[in-house]
Length: 266
Length: 177
Image 1: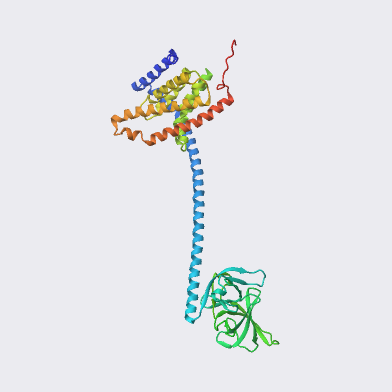
Image 2: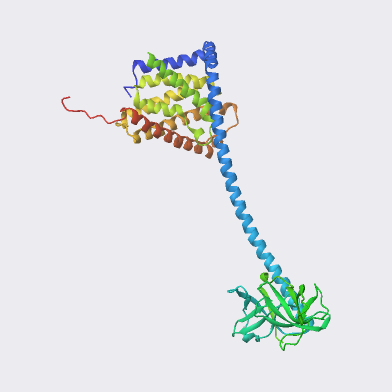
């Protein structure tokens, strides 16, 4: 401490005391005002520089915060979208099930409800679905596969114990005996066409058939009841020299968006 | 003389920065106390009486810009300098970063606690402020932030000074030299 107490230090302490004393008696007013006058512009510049710096920092952090909020909202939006899609799927499933149950109770038919667990489209013309119900549920080859309120979409062609396989009506190898709704005398064979539509062949040339006529099952097949809706006539192909005419049939339902089906245990 | 004049201008600029620039910076940069940092660094680089003179100028500038009573800053700085120099003389023999950092902590604590005590005592007569209100958690949080901010600045300045000068380098005394 001894080195701190020396003449120079003591005189500086004394100077400080004098400055404080002179301030309170008002002798320093002029000096203080002059110093402030000189210093003020520099202080203003320094203050403005600090404010600008702070503003830049705030803007940067604001931008970062906005980015984070945006990311969080995007994630939330995605979650909601997923939730919405799953709820929509559930609603569709529910609706589909209700329609199918109504159809069966109305027509007094037995059924096996199942989910599509696989879709086989190895070839361009192939449209096959795998259903998670099989022979143990009473499913047999040749039975009709339905959706909604009695719309036929395909026919079982192979059955395992626990799963079954059906060709959709658009499969090239699919063949279903059909007729025109309200025109029972017109009968034909519905075959898949390039995996997109189906065609009704073997319609006599003189048969009264028009576009938008509804195609239904004819009931000629042992395991398929009469009157199941399949689609409607989209286009007619007639050639005067041919014995038969052909109707291009558009399925009554989009076959790509199906998840629940029923099989008529007829 | 010219060198001294430059030093005084530099001290004034530091003080102006402390008064006008630092407080508007975003937190925690606004907690930096350039006066304390300069004082501690000055104690390592210059003679004590020189530092005392420069800090008297800084204290004067702070006091005329302060809304507290005149003399608070000068007395706080002087007290801080004397106690810090005492610690430097008695307990810290080298000029390492550790010594300077510990002294900075001591200086900051003395400066802040002295000012707060004086302000509290002065205000206690006129205001209804209780001790627990004044020395709340926020006060200690602010003090801790200031310590951290000062330390960061001091470390940066220390290494910068070390790069350009040899003032902080160890001195070896040779026998017979």
